[in-house]
Length: 156
Image (cartoon, rainbow, N blue to C red; front, top):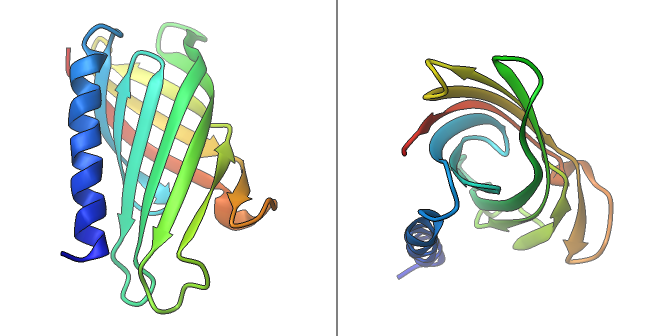
């Protein structure tokens, strides 16, 4: 089994285990977003937010994982709009031939604006997450900055 398949299986088992634990934490949402790094699948429960992405571009494939704790979670601005601020960890594992490092990781601060539609069932979001790389060495770099625009739906 190759590295890609092992990572995907580990991730799916972590998310399924977390979702069982999450039932007691509050509202659970599942979503989809576009941005950098590319396309992500979003899983939120209570104050926790997990984003998983994969880039299929030939020669520069990578797997991305971001987990955050939302210190300010969906604070209302008005009836429709709310804001979220958190702290999180991210990691990016590269598989392509063009990549200089196989793994980068660090800390980020995700800031999200949300718009609740259809009585909160559908939520549109825009997130920017400035970050600092801690591995392989501590450094501020543009490749550690992430942003997404997408939607999520309520599962509860």
